[in-house]
Length: 153
Image (cartoon, rainbow, N blue to C red; front, side, top):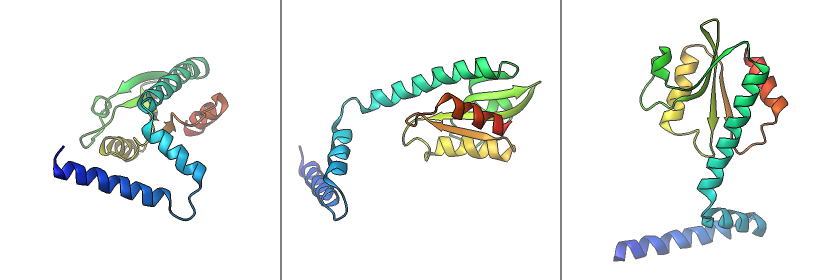
């Protein structure tokens, strides 16, 4: 390890220590943050949350909105949006008689501030389409999902 790598490691550890021990931060909160940061399963659990949410949406859209056409993982360019690049694919595009009525995005933790997500949201808003975003780390109960989709339609 070179001098720069060592210095970077020491500096990051010191900054983390100062932030974690700052006034107003509880010990429980600090321990939770440290456990989250150190956990090798963090990436896997977010992927599993997203997969579970996708399965829930598949079932809800099939059961409650079977009269609508639903397409999964649709690129903005495929539905005639003018979108900047990069642009994240929409998790679901909901159509009624060939007219798009809503776009739905399922999002993992910390993935709603990157350029691809923001460009996808902007493209939907520019087309005056309801853009529904659901975070995988929230409960997203069945009734909640149904009510948000109905409100958008």
